Image (cartoon, rainbow, N blue to C red; front, side, top):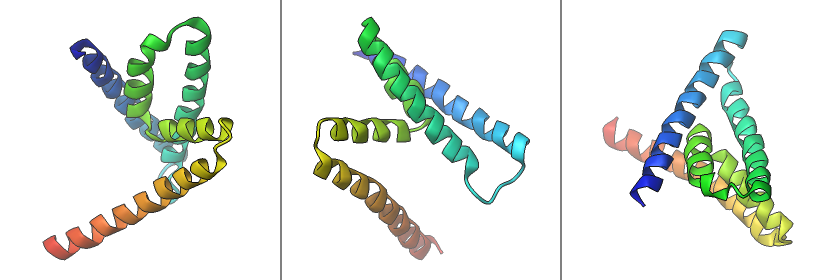
Length: 126
């Protein structure tokens, strides 16, 4: 258990570092953007890599690397990749209602929670 947690932590550090470096790279290539181009790049790349890893790991018996790669590296790079995987899995299972609900709740409620956190914190610490 401790070794698995250590692998997740190591992967998370690698993923977070890669996310930061991707942001730096996008800034250097395109300069300051009002549109969150770096975050979109990270989300799309991370989701693509999650799809690649899931298939390769299943086909080649490498699922034991999932905590390091999926939770650690890709989770540190972008949590959006895990969201994307869960959504597609629900669709593939034919559970359209849960997939749509998952999308609506994940996106809508998360944005609402962030807005609430901003409002409350600004009210308390303003």
